[in-house]
Image (cartoon, rainbow, N blue to C red):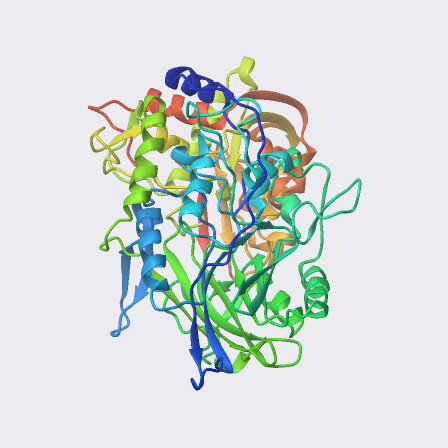
Length: 605
């Protein structure tokens, strides 16, 4: 789920001034994660401990700082009904996630909570404005025991990740609340496959061992090896990312030597199940059923010493079994995103062998419904940070006549993608701003929908700064570069070939660019080169075009090497500034902006 960060310093300076915040620079070391005093057993009494004990593993992934329930279609999960119809259920929000987890733990004295990465980054304004300190505070309150790092944990670089772990106020903006120093995460962030280039040493702990009454479970955490391809160069500077399978196998051997025989891998990489319904039976035997994507080969390569895999990154929901190298089934799970689901897995621990009885591993995803009681401590946390954010968050930017779907759209061409690309083209078309003729937007950088229903007291149809920020939270600087027509064609073909062939990344394009996407073909041929036109004229391979895109794409991110070949670069305003300027120029309360037609990419299926 790629896209990138350049945090809006000016915004935060305004906030700091408005709130009169104190600056404190001290760092404090993170408290080690304590095992929670919870558990369940099988066997006979007679004063002896039972032979086996059930350990409850609760897990989730890809929270992305969504403390409040995500708005619009991005806040729904799909549930297949007994009659085969699919129902959308509103879900998520940490007030409800906290209640769900706390309810699930009742009656389970042995319970451990783990996460699969991307807890922070690409966050809504409530968390993103404060460099995700509110989310770390919420995760501490949720009693998270351990998480892997995801690619978004590197959005602001290794030093900022270390601050989230260890605490201390922001080096530039200081402390956000007077007299309060940020404590950092009281759970370990694991990054087994991330090392420092200079020393070769791990950036953070590779693993941790959860212990309770003699029961020991090791957790190894990795992010996807391809993290540098989907994060800005500054975010991964000085770091090396290693193969997920080799790394997990190495540390599984190390844990085994130390007598830890029960091991769970937390992997920020995932797959795509054949159905988007969270309650889909991933192990149903029909043709085309099951799961595909990078996690399948990873799971097949990980040593049988590992008993279960908690995964993430693709924002999908699945509970699947994938055979380990010895051919035995092993559970692979993912809980969608944004705190909308959690996974409840039972690991039966054999005290004699110190291992998990693999045949007994059971797992299921559960919806974090919004019809349960809110956790009052999370409500207080949200209210506290909302008060600090309010001077900026509630400022109106424009008006819309209906929902304009971005994140919630599954189509290759998204209505909100068109609005964003048009905003970038309009803002950078003037000669003194770069002379852009066409603009491209990466789909992973669109983090939400624009929702017509009011999120607060602003009124229906009003787009606030907070809502616009939630759509484009990275505040990437825009670039305008020279590319030849041949390079443009290659870039469009890279959407569906190379590293993007298995999971296409369809760029959102500004008005005037049209082409046909033929999904019945394979690889680069899916983009029909002869159909690519700009303002009705065929692209001339030899001609130079001025092309606008964010700095992430201009650096060749998301597998778009051709876009990284641009020359004669001009750096423009941020993507968020251009988006807000476009909303202001094209909407009023009396004439709100309508969802645009999606007629730029003709799709053949």
